[in-house]
Length: 197
Image (tube, rainbow, N blue to C red; front, top):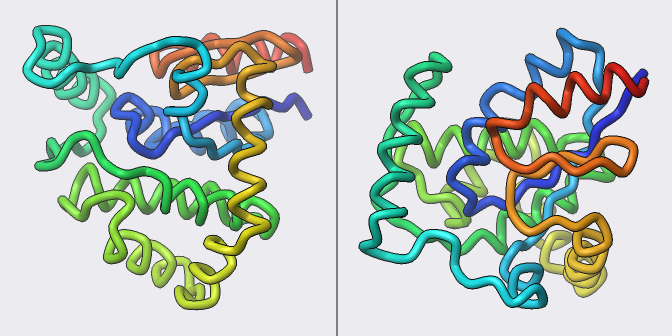
């Protein structure tokens, strides 16, 4: 079965559009997803890149309108979050802890859904606990593991791995060493995976 790495940053706005549909599209096309939660700020810092959407800029205003348009065209529920940017580090830690146990994708889908349709701030304790409860997981146990020194180090190790792949933003997809960046490249990445599989 062809496979594709999915690099997700939990504060990334366009990642919502990907997370909301990638599971269905990949299953339809027979592509296995290798979820790679990571924390983008140190990746961008090492590349000398600034914040992608400066506050009160024309670019940021465009992003919000573009997200609304794209969500509508894709038939996805959308509710603009009241807070931006958010602290995505807690979500990334939990997601990485779940990667080994096979629930990273379901957790990711749920924290994004809560944030982008229910107004439950991603990275918040409420968001994390609600998502884990939906998965039937013990939130206290998972959060303890997510905040363990070993898991924190594992998340830090995602930074050099992302840099090796040339990643500079999210969502990003890597197929056989080929990088695709942005939600609007999701279909291209899946097609490449099928072709290379």
